[in-house]
Length: 299
Image 1 (tube, helix red, strand yellow):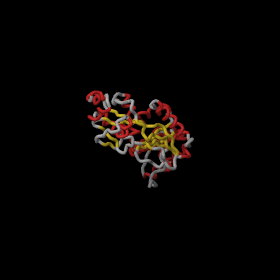
Image 2 (image 1 turned 135 degrees about the vertical axis):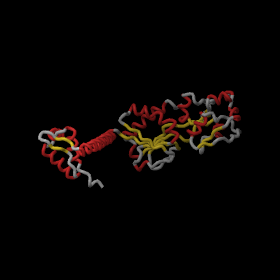
Image 3 (image 1 turned 90 degrees about the horizontal axis):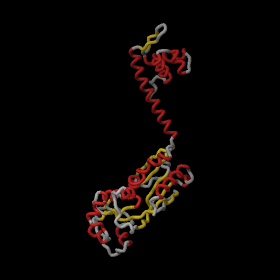
Image 4 (image 1 turned 180 degrees about the vertical axis):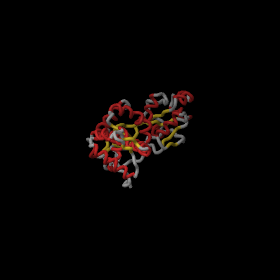
């Protein structure tokens, strides 16, 4: 494909000679002899079928075509050098590839990655955001943070955070509904539901002592983060997952009307990795950082 290109060494000799207007100086820069530079330029001229220089007694001057070609060669060699340096620099940085869910990435992990980078600047985080469990044994990612029951096949895992759920809504919504001082006040509210959520409204009402409470229908969201965002917009009351609502509660975007009633969910957040990676430096760093970040949220 590239067999018609001139050899790289001829381009380097030409670029240096044109830039320095001297074969002698070009030879010194490239650590070769004057004769080697002369031969490389002659070889390039033969390859191109062009005269690149006017050779005077004590001076060498670019021809019009030589000057045009010099601009092209300078640009191409500069691009090649810049990209080579970029790739070389990337190899000096350790890559940490993490697969995790959409909700966890958007509501909790991504806002905290700057703190990870400040602490571990030698690591470059690569996120694979998907709600599908990726195959950790194919080497595409180093670890996964999964929301599940902890029963994962052919991998090692450890529970990082046990989830609880509790009703949340926007401050304006709470005010419009007279503060929701009693659980029965939820009868007059739109309840937001998360698809396939085991710790659902029915389970929460039973835990809160309203076993006969008939949970009314309301909007159904595929992701927990979507239900949370709907609550922030004032569309109703969501059953907020503790990890996903933490930042919004801290920022005042959400309020918790019944903080005394928190239902422990069956699912939680697990750090999952290949069994032969348990003691790897990358996993140790990630495990320690996650534990520290999550510690402030644990009841």
